[in-house]
Image 1: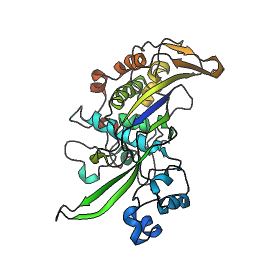
Image 2: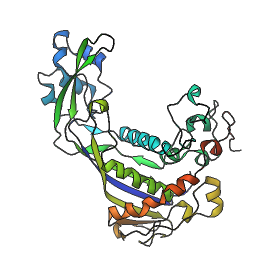
Image 3: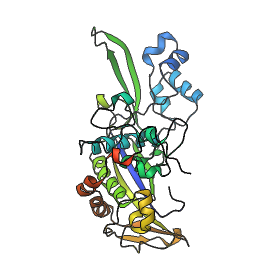
Image 4: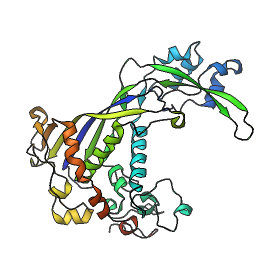
Length: 348
């Protein structure tokens, strides 16, 4: 979307995990456990490990060691940005769908048969790309609000996530569970997992070429993140995955002309001309929120002007009204945004 850089928010986020946080390493599962560990020792070995950057042979050494919990402390654990992104996106999708009876936000997991008579929640990706991999001319214009922020197969995301790097040393715990048969009540084989305990991690978010309502929506999301309402990873029904997240640093970058002047936050709808706003479906210009920011001379350049937000709570308080009930009520339904299913108008 767009052939130029216009604006960008770079946000440093601190995540504080709870007693048990597990994003599983997909390279280790029950099949691998059976291959790596003899039958006699399997009951004492973990069935799941947190994801790490170490090699599979290293994972095998940990699982086969006499004390896997102690050996696992040497692994390079981290929280994948893709897992955090998925949890945050799903939370926003469900939250925004609760505001209206008619569909405004798509459901990437819904099937054609589950659309329902009240309107189609069919994923934007399925509607905006046909079987011949042809895309609509301006997919942003036809995408739902969450897809506009997080992207779909027809267009890139406005919001990028780094992996979250854990503070060292990392505390681990071993948690035992058993599977219970719903039919007979019998106890199946135990499930033992190594989890991160009270983990602290830091990630970077980058919101590029944003509209003001997108910054406001992030402000509302960080309210929920600060209250621990968005769990991560496996075992949520068992109480795992509890965490809180808060922004510890926010930088605003304006590309081209210096439009910020360290006093107002401007989105695409306030910066670009009316023709381009109409082409892309940007929200109409509104009164820009006042912000307090300090120019960072060493990182600014001829075409880049960088500011540090000085009061983060005040910044979120200023931008959250950019995504309010009035704006949401004015957003079109999915049926009004999209071409008919199977009728993808491609760019000539």
